[in-house]
Length: 397
Image (cartoon, rainbow, N blue to C red; front, side, top):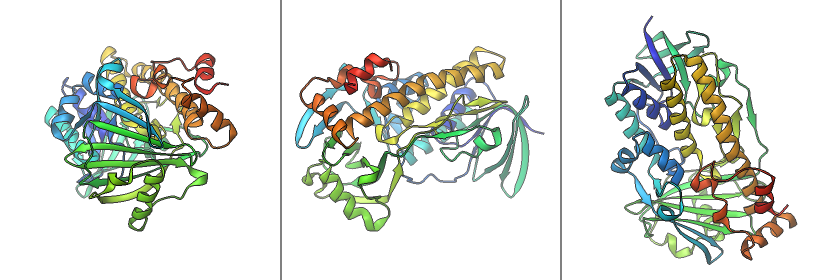
């Protein structure tokens, strides 16, 4: 039976980043990726400033920037037509780094190629059909017309929010209540400043719209909305409605002059899905397999890179990889738990309909609440304490 140090299920951001980092240090890494070519599936395409710092720590920032990355230095927030924030992220965050945007499939290709160059064995068009937990875990891989079972010191599942490895490892998935939903669509030929991300809110309609330029006129737009109040935008026939809803959410109509929607349109639920303590018996969950945070707040890719760095560091610190896996899971629960709490509070602040939501937002509009004082989504989960004092400061209750 062939043996590896690490077998990653999935060769996207998390799997390839970990594989590259560990292979560079001489570890034997197998990457099992189901696709032979990555496609646009409307995933996250932006690293927050704290995620850019994680990319730097992992030696990925320059690779992403050179492959297809675009630095967004400015973060603009509008309520209706009024701009309430014009923020230089390189001057106002601990990392002093901008947001980094990219086209997700191109990012994935760059990273999986980098993992292979670093020495990882990459199998594309392959599928893991089983994972056996234990002191010497095993995975069974279907590839190139055959099936093979291999052993490893640790299985790292990077197979997304619908992770099969969660079931094989005996993990229990938890899911929050439905509140927000988010629709995404890619545009080409949009003439906006490439160094500026824009977030617009329509508080009356419980909607927000985002623009993340990727350079060269390519822009990913999202609409986040209170699920019970707004339609689910899906498929080619809904692209016209997407434009209507984006304008209603606060994006200027002229933004879309000359811009062409390209690629698919889909809507995703914003409810967090997560596992408490995402390691057991030789199987570690990473990225969305461990915790799929509400994409409305744009933290998923940054969180994945934090997972990668944390797991890597724990593995490098100890020869006892079972203990390292548990140490990773404990750390993950801490930083993800912080983000989870902040997302809940800011969802109530910025989107929740009703009188309570109106009262919270009035504090923001009158200046009673200064958003930059509480900055977990750009400065990172450790930038504020998720305690009763902070809750009262954010929500006024």
